[in-house]
Structures are given as structure tokens and as C-alpha cells.
Length: 265
Image (tube, rainbow, N blue to C red; front, side, top):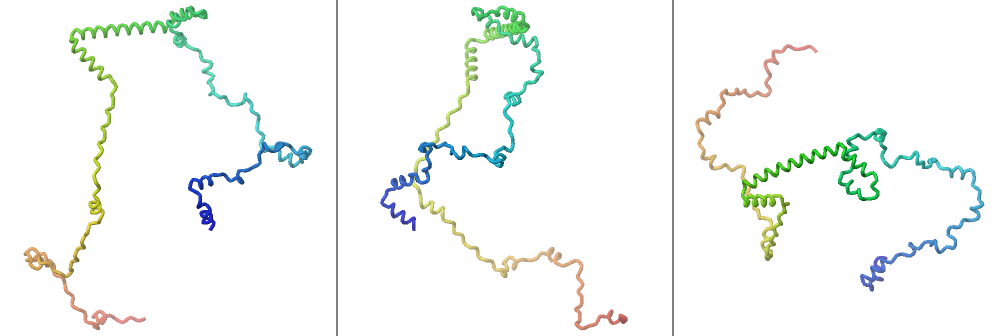
């Protein structure tokens, strides 16, 4: 066989040499026409240049469906369409006040030479409704802070400094992020010698003895020595005695058949 002949031929090679020979490519399959080796690979024949296309070739050369050219005006927009009401909307006074920068940033940019309209913007910020709202909010926050400071001052007077420090330490402990406990290292069991005899005992199936068959005609001793009670004797007999029909004599004719009149057919 061919496989045996190949084995015999490759028998003198080692395993590594055999694999390296098998890994080499087959040049008959890989070798193709190289474009760069040809003198004029993209040259057109003179007969093809002078040839005239027939009517059939012209008809076949036309496409089945004429695709329209790309028109950027008719093309769908890249971004979603904005509603005309959104474009025609007018900003309210509150939005204008919220859009104004803060007074701090304006004052910080006053020193730059390019800040021509900063003074007018600063005036608008000072007169804006949002500025007044911020002023009232800051005043409210200051009142709340003063109230908290009073409550804390009362607490510090009532509580001793040691108790206050202990309370702050407890708060720091409670506010600290919880660190998950490290898992306990698993104790490796000590190596023990393998008991082969014990494994053989567990692998062998248990020996079960077949039960001895029971004799169907054997009467148990309890049934032989049993004494029947009066109640069972009473129940054993039926209440209504059954009528015993006399046996029929073979060949005897019934009296109804003898008395029956004959029928004409």
C-alpha cells in the first residue's frame, strides 16, 4: 500500500525532520503568474481598440436600473431634524438671568484688555432677578448655620469634653467605609496512606441470600390450634337459608310443553 511505502521511505528521518518536510508548501499550487515579471501586464490589444461594438452588446451594456446621482440637498441630514417651534422659540427673562455668569468670574476677568462689555454685563448681573434669589438663599443658609452653631454650643456646655471626644470618635468609626473581612485560609488535610483493602471491600457488591420459597399447601400451626369463637360461628351462617333446587332429570319433558296446543305452520 502507498501509506506503508511512505512510512518505509520516511523511516530514517526523525519526528522533527518529518514535520519540517510536511510543513513546506507545495510550489505547484502556490506558483501563479507574477504581474511584475510581465513586460506590459495592463496592455490592451490592438484588435480590442479597433473593434466596434454591435447593437446587442450596446443593449447588454446598459444597466437594468439607473441609479440617481448623489444630491446633497435631497440627501437625509446627518443630525435629527429640529422642530421649527424650537428654532422660533424666544427665551424668557428667567433663562436670560440664569445664563448670566457669576459676579466673581466677571470681576476676575476685568483686568484683561479684551473685556470691553464686562462692565455692562456686571450691571445686568447685579440687577437680575437670579442675583436677588441667590442673595436670599445665602441669607437663609447663614441663618441656618448660626442656629446650628448655637445648638452645638449648648451641647458643648452640657456635655463634658471627654464625652464629646468619644462621641466624635464613634462618629468617625461609623462614617468610615466598611472593609470586607479577609477569607480564612483553608487548612489542607494531611496526606494519609491509601487503604486498598478498604476500597476493595466497598467496591465489591454485598452477598445476598435468596429467600426460601414458601410451601403453598402447608398449613400454619396457629391455624391448626385456633379455637373459633361464638361470634364467628354466628356470623358464619347466613340469615336467610338459600333454596336448593332439585336436580333436573335428563330426558324429562316439562309439563308446560305437554300442555301447549299444537301450532299450524
